[in-house]
Length: 103
Image 1 (cartoon, one colour):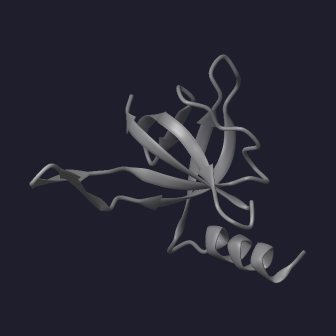
Image 2 (image 1 turned 90 degrees about the horizontal axis):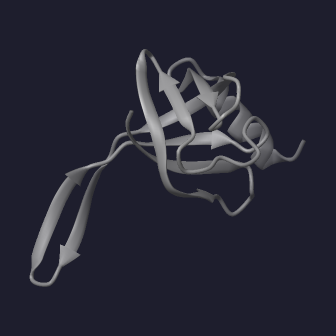
Image 3 (image 1 turned 45 degrees about the vertical axis):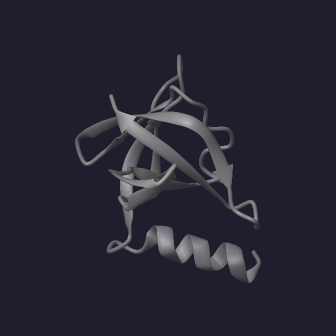
């Protein structure tokens, strides 16, 4: 395991950062995974206006979820979400970042 993979594993395993979740691919069975939640605000420029919106994003380890797709379901701490849009992998190809919407 390289240094980046070890660091990612430590972050996801940390009880203050990582959370247990259930990932269910569309038409598949649930799988227990660890996620890192990010609920950041997003600012989008639209002409001369700037729009503020809340976002719900999570990081998934590629080792646990090989190919997340829009419509797949993720449940974190009793809240259910659906993946929307295309997931994006980090530069090291260790972590997926997915945008979520309430299910």
